[in-house]
Image 1 (spheres, rainbow, N blue to C red):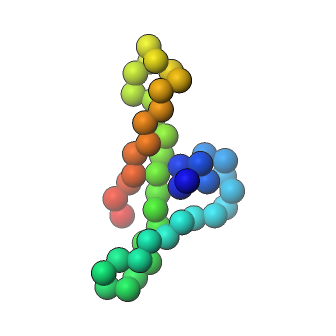
Image 2: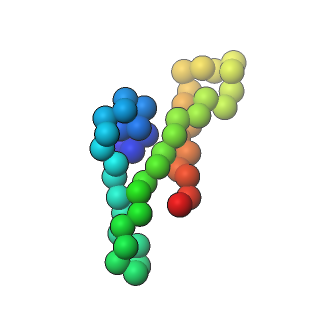
Length: 48
């Protein structure tokens, strides 16, 4: 869901609460690793 919100520039960011009680944004990007199969998408989450 985070990748969809990011790709359509909705202005909404999902956050996850860590063990200390702080909220960290979930940033996921869509990557197409194989140019021979452009319909296959892989989602990668950036660590913050």
